[in-house]
Image (tube, rainbow, N blue to C red; front, top):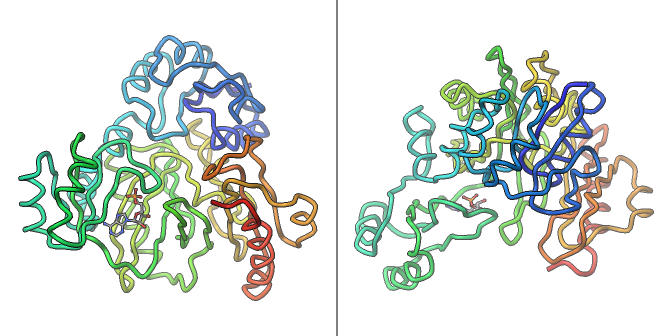
Length: 368
Ligand code: AMP
C-alpha cells in the first residue's frame, strides 16, 4: 500500500480516496472537523490546517503529501517537505492565495486577465478607478471564495461604502468583465512534466456558487480548446507543478481572460468521474505518485449539477437514465454543497432531456 497524506478532508479528499484506493493507495487526511467526508476512505487526523504537529501526524509514513483546499497555509505544506514530497508545490499556494500575485504571475506568463490594480487605501481605490474605469470589482486579495469578499462598483458614489465593507484588508480592483460565459480548463502535470488537459467546460453559478457544469463546453472547437490550454500550460511549467490544476476563465467573444487559479482538483472537474476516460481524481493520484497519466478524453457529452442545501430524492434520481449520484454524507445546511449528480448521454439531445429531469429533482424545495 502506498500511503498518501491529504491536507483537507472534505468531499474532494473523499473523491481522491475513492479514486486512489483501487490504485493500491491508502489515505490519511488532516481536517479540523471530526467526521469530515474523507473519514469514510482513510484515517482522519483532526486538527487545524495550521497545526504543524497534527499535519506531521497525518503525513507519518506517507510516500507523498497533497492538499485538496487552496486555503492550506503554505507554511504547513513547507513544513512537510522534509517528510515527503509535497505536490502541488507550496509555491502554487503562495500564488493562488493572493489575487494580486496570482494575476501578476498570469500576466508575466502572457496569460490575459482583466485589468487590475492593488488597493491598500481609499486613495489607492480612487486612483485605481481612474485607471481602470467603472464598473469594476473590488475584492479582498486573500480569503475570498464563491463570490465572498467582493463588491461590484458601478458609480463613483459607491467607493466609500465598498471600502468600508472590504477595506480592513488589502484589496485588488479588477475591471468588470462583460463575459459571454464562464469556462474552466483543468489540466494534470506529471512528475516527468507531461501535461494533459481535459476538454474546457462551461460553468453556471448561482449566488456565487457553482451550480452546473457542461462538459465539453458547448461549441468547443480545437481553436478555443487551444486558447484554454494556453491559459494553463505555461503556468504549470512555471510552477513546476505536479497534480491537477484548474484555471477559471471568462469567455469574451472567444477571447479568454483568466480569473482564478485553483491548485487542486476542482468542482468543475467532477464530471470527469463518469464523463472522461480518466477522472481528475485518479489522474491527480497518478501524477503525484509519478505513475503514467491516463487519457483525459471525454467519453461523450455530460453535465454536472451540484446539490446545494438539499439532496434530490434518491430513488427518483437513480431512475433517471445516465444520472450518477455522489452524496458526500454531509448534514444539510443552506448554501452547502452536499453532493453532485453527473449526467451522461450518448448524444446532446438525450443529455438535455436527462439533465432537465435531474435539474428538476435537484432544484426541488428548500433551495436558498
Ligand atoms: P471569484 O471569486 O474571483 O471566482 O469570482 C466569483 C464570480 O464573480 C465569478 O465566477 C464571476 O461570475 C464574478 N466575477 C469575478 N470577477 C469578475 C470580474 N472582474 N468581472 C466580472 N465578473 C466577475
